[in-house]
Length: 134
Picture (cartoon, rainbow, N blue to C red):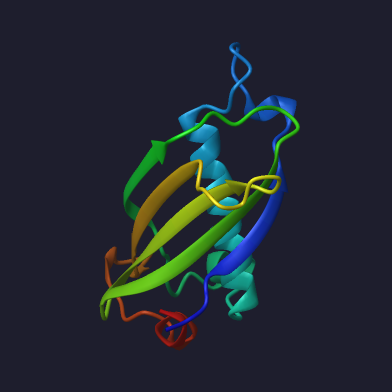
């Protein structure tokens, strides 16, 4: 089994709503930041993918569950674990923890991604770097 990837992040004022808590869209963006960092560590450059236009990895499903609120100034650890679905798609499971209480996730999320040819919009095989990491 591949070890979870870990990403550290601070909650900023811009991440919060009028009630002073992180709202769902920003939490999903935080997870996506962790995903982008994970891609970089396995050797996949999003900049190169976007320039070459050979494949794209759109999210086709996402969900998020909040167990505790997140506030401005919170120091977070976002872990992600990838899992293969088939030759064309994979899932990412995210857990968000406060660094000062890392024993219990305050948020859990998932995203499902499919690999496509961005020109024809048809399924394409996952890159080998992802296959090796799921």
